[in-house]
Image 1 (cartoon, rainbow, N blue to C red):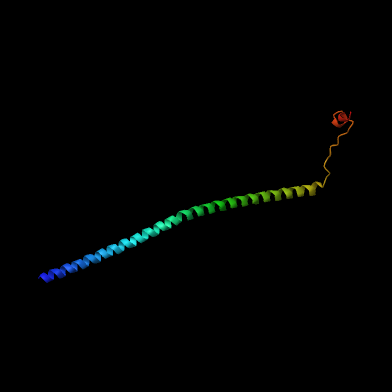
Image 2: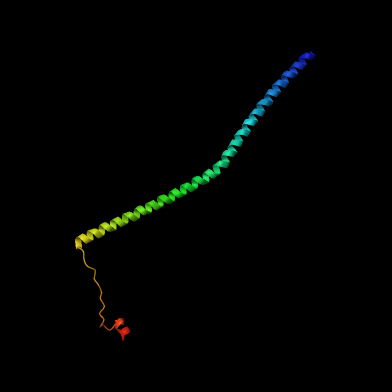
Length: 113
């Protein structure tokens, strides 16, 4: 009977050791997962910042591009409007204002005297 107790005790020790080994394996796997998450988290923050900056720059570029498109469209419309006006009225010489030296408001005559 004494031998049977030793065998039972040994079997119990084997079962207990197997359970401890399973728990240790589970804890080691969980520790690896947590380490991976921490590592991914360390790289995720700079990647997130980089993506945010890239998105902001892309929005600004799109905004500027749209502004240039609107500017180009308005210049094109002004050109077509002026072109139709010139075609309708014809080219005219601009009126020129010529000052006469003998007029009383002429300063060139006063400076000479």
